[in-house]
Image (cartoon, rainbow, N blue to C red; front, side, top):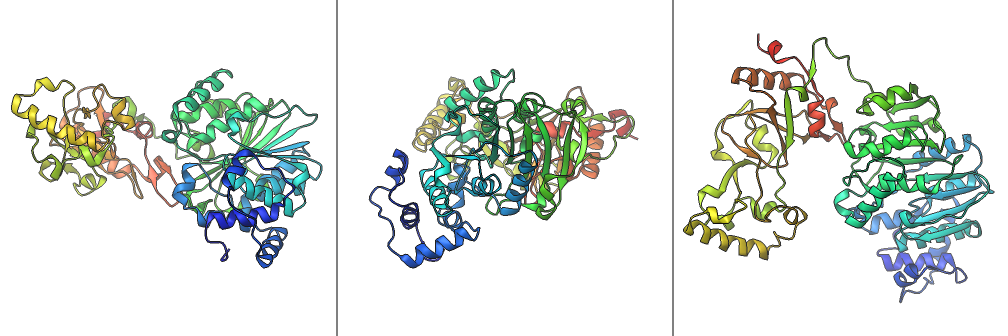
Length: 528
C-alpha cells in the first residue's frame, strides 16, 4: 500500500475500518495511544474494496513496513493463499466445526478463509501482537464477521477456551521462534505440559512445538486440526515431543512436506510441513507426501499410506515421507565407529577469536582453531598446517595455573572482555568459568555442517581445534591413519546433500546425529 509508510499510519487505517463501537484490549489501546483513525476516505474505500475482493492489504502492508528480521523474532510469517486454501479444503472434508480457533491469527488469513467455508462456526483468533490484532479486527469488520469472532490478544499458551457443543477446528501457522529466544519460564511450562501427557520435552524446541502441546491441552476428543510449520521437527531430537503426540493422543492423520525448492514463505528461508490431526483418534496409517510445488497441494487429498507401526519406529520421519536408497549389505551407521561432536560455542566470537584486541596475550592461551567453513573447504583433503588458521582464546578454568606475567596480561584482557559483555552471554553464564571457552580435543577428521553443497570431510593432521561451524569425528576405537584416510575419502565421494536437512533456498544442514546416521562400509572393508 503506497499510501502507508509506517506503523502509525497502518494503525490509523485499521482504526478507521474497525469503527468506534468495537472495544479493544488493553494491549491494543496502549499500542494505538495518541493515534486517531485516518480521515482519508479514498484510502479507506480502496482498502475496503481490496479486502472484500479477497486480498489482505493490511497484512501485506504490515509485512512490508516491519522488517522481516524483527517479525521473525516473534515468528510473524504470513502464509500464502494456496496453502491456506488447501488446508481449509482438508478441514471442510472433515465436516463442519462448531468453532474455529486460529492459534497465531496475524491479520486473519486462516480465520477468514475458514469463516467463509463454515458460516455457522464461532471464530476465535489468538494473536500476541496488538498491532496485528487490530489488523485482524479491521478485516473482520469489513467482511461483516466481527460479531461471530472473539479476539484474544495474548499468548496462545495461556489462552483459555470455553466448553462448547460440537467440534473445534484448530488451524493456522504457529509462530516459528527458535529456542534461544524463548525464556526459561516458558521452557519450563513446555516441559511440564508435555510431561502431563507422558512425553519428554527438550528445551531446544521452537515455539511452534509449544503450540501443538497447548492445542493438546485445549482440545477434546473429536476436535481436529491442521497446522503448517517448519519441517525441522521431522528429524531433530526436540521434534520427538511432537512425533510422540501425533502417534498418540493428538492423532496424526496426514503429513505433507513441501520440497525445499518450494520456499513457502516469501520472507523466511525455511521448509514447510503441513500436519493434519484428529484429536483422540489415530488411524492405522499415516498419509505422507512430498510436495514439489504449491499448485500440487490439491487440498491435501492424496499421499502414501504408511502404517503407524512403521512411523513410530522410525528415527527420522523425513525418510518416511521421501525414502532414500536401500542400504547396501554389510554397511553400518557411521555412529557405530565414530562419535560426532559439534565444535564449541564461544558465546561471543568478536571477543574470543583472536585479533588486534589479543596482541598482549601469551601464545599458550591462543589455540589454532577452525573458525569458519572456508578453513576446511580450502584445505582440500588434508588440513596440514595451522599457520593460516585464526586463534581462539582458550583460558583454563583455574587462572592460577598461569605464570605471573601471563596472568597479568590475561586479567587485563578479561577486564576488556567484560566491558564488551562477554561475561553476560547465555553461553558464558552457563560455563564453569565465564572466561573458559573449553575447546574440545582435536578430532582426527573434521567436516563442515551447513552449506549449499555436500559437507567437506577433511583429515586434521595439525591437531587444530574447531568451534561450532564444524563437526569433529572421533573414532570410538583406535583407528590408524590409513583407515582414517580411507574413511574420509569414502565420505567425500559418497555423501550428498540428501543425507542432511535441506532448507528452503537449498541450504543443507547436517546435525551430529545426521552425520552419525550415514551408512558406511565397515572399517575392514574401507582399506583394500
